[in-house]
Structure formats: structure tokens, C-alpha cells
Amino acid sequence: MMSFLTQPWPWYVAGPAIGLTVPLVYLYAGRKWGISSTFRDVCAATIPSGLDYFDYSWRHLGGWRLTMAAGLMIGGFVAALTGPGDVAISEATRADLGGLGINDFAGVVPSELFSWSALATVPGFVLIVVGGFLVGFGTRYANGCTSGHAISGLSALRVTSLVAVIGFFIGGLVSTHLLLPMLLGGGM
Image 1 (cartoon, rainbow, N blue to C red):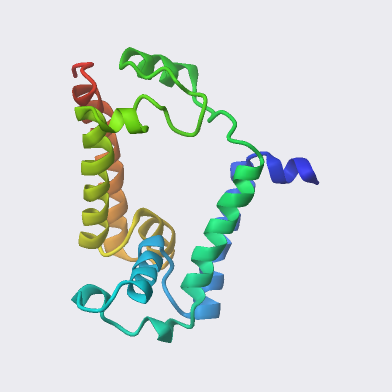
Image 2 (image 1 turned 135 degrees about the vertical axis):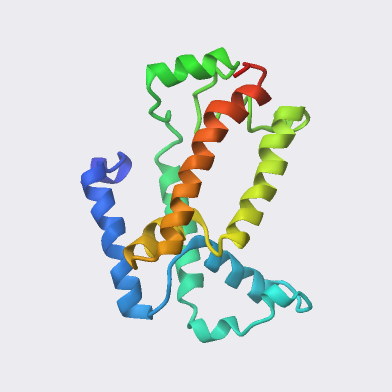
């Protein structure tokens, strides 16, 4: 039983578990599910009033999103107890990233890109600060995050979520094959 908790779950277990969670949230809470909505509720509960975006009655949601956020943090803590481990990356991807100067695969993220020393470089600043801003802006502009659109929106057959998910994939491909090599000096 313990090995089931300490090893990554196979896709055929994790996928249906995520897929079944969405209808349960709709049935139980009657609400859409997504991390950006939860983050907005946390901000509305903790940030002093004055910003229109956070000025709404978050209490009427019954606290279920805040409970979900607590569950995510507890889940992250439990996952950290099992040790960081190496992320499973194919040899072809390791070789491609090695060509861009990324060779540290010992943790969850490569330290060449995500560390305090990397933040002091132009590529690190662009990836961490500018990328973080663009993710936040995109989430607000798209009225939801990747998990909200891809899991909740698609299960509700929303066309806007389908368009958003297609945009996420196109953006990911452009970032991976064009922007990252240009930023890290690997050409195009």
C-alpha cells in the first residue's frame, strides 16, 4: 500500500480520478473548478479592500475553494515527504535541453533556469518574472487558468474553453520550439 502512495500514479488511474472530480464538484458545490478562481478567493479574503477585482462577497462560496486550496497545500506537503526524486524526462529531451545549456535534472526544475542565481541573468529574469506576469495576465484575460479550462470548461462542453486550451497548446509549442531556444542562445 505504501508504494502506491510514494510512486507516481499511472495515467489510467490519475486521469479518471481527475475526470470524476469535476462532476462531483459540480454536484456538490454547483461551482466551476479552477485554481485561478481559488487564488482570487484567497486574495479577496486577505487583501484589504479597494481593488475592484477583489471586491466581492467571497464568503457566499461556502469556503469550499479555500478548503480545496488547503487540500492542495497538504497534498504538496505529503508529496514532499516522499522526497523530490528525479523528474522522468526522455533521453531525447535531455539531449535537446543539454544543447541549450540545461544539464541539471536532479530536482523538480532545472537550477540553471529556476534559482536565485538564475534570476540575476536576463534569461532567468524573463522566464521567472516576465513569464510569471504573462501567466497571471493570461489567466485573467482568458477568465481562467489551464486547469479550469482544460478540466472544468471542457467537461462542461464550453467552446470558449476549447479555444483557450488550443491557445495554451499553441503557446506551449511556440515557447518550447522558438522562444526558449532564442532566449537561451540556442538559435532557432
